[in-house]
Image (cartoon, rainbow, N blue to C red; front, side, top):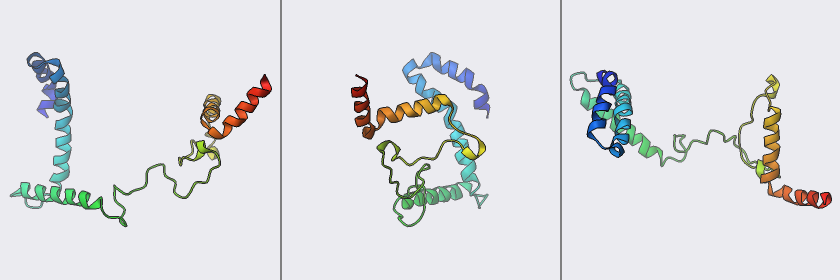
Length: 148
């Protein structure tokens, strides 16, 4: 905790010693690495069962964690972090007629609560569909011919 308090003076002293290219990577190490190490120590510290020799319990917990992660990559029928569906995957087969709508996403807002697109957002959505959907290009070409 004292390092966090004195980090400004430490970084200023390092800035005088090391070249700027080397120093930019050191900022990350000096600022973020101690916090990450503290979080890991707190997480693994909860697994200590033998207070006389905590390092053995911490190593055992780390080996279990790494083993579960490694084996989890190869388990097909068990839900793990590696085979979980994506956040916006709603499941099922989408059978959309327009290619621009073939992506599976969650809807924006809740119409039941009165949430919807603003007029500007709706115009941007219309522009996107008109300019990115291959199926509409024939209609756009036909419209341009009619306007001539």
